[in-house]
Amino acid sequence: MLEDAEGFLRPLRGRTIILDEIHRLQNPSEFLKIAADHYPEIRILATGSSTLSASAKFKDTLTGRKESLWLTPIVGRDLIDFGQADLSKRLLFGGLPPFFLSEDIPERDFQDWVDGYWAKDIQELFHLER
Image (cartoon, rainbow, N blue to C red):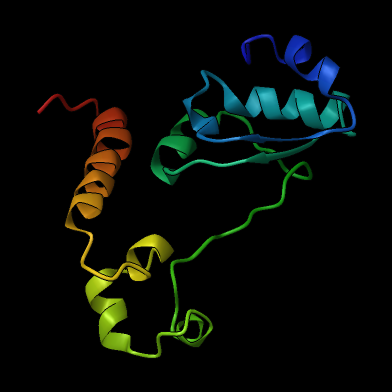
């Protein structure tokens, strides 16, 4: 559906949409430029888990058409907000909120996260098979 940017965007006028993994499009910068230039009343939150892959796919700049938001894992001052002032738990469980808030070390979830990172970011970017 996103290959036809205007056909996709036309019925969404005045709405907010979220496009996760935007870098998986063939030409994500072209899609976002069309949206910004021809459909400014549509608010788009475009996310991607891989800056490596995204930078290779974005052929054009989006200067003046975007705002960047950097989402960090839990940092020291967040520990109190999460009710866990213990830095050793943060170091052991990691900084992603679902992992940090777990009662037990979420080994399976960690493995899924690492596998996903490997598959999405490393294998696709460098075209690795093994």
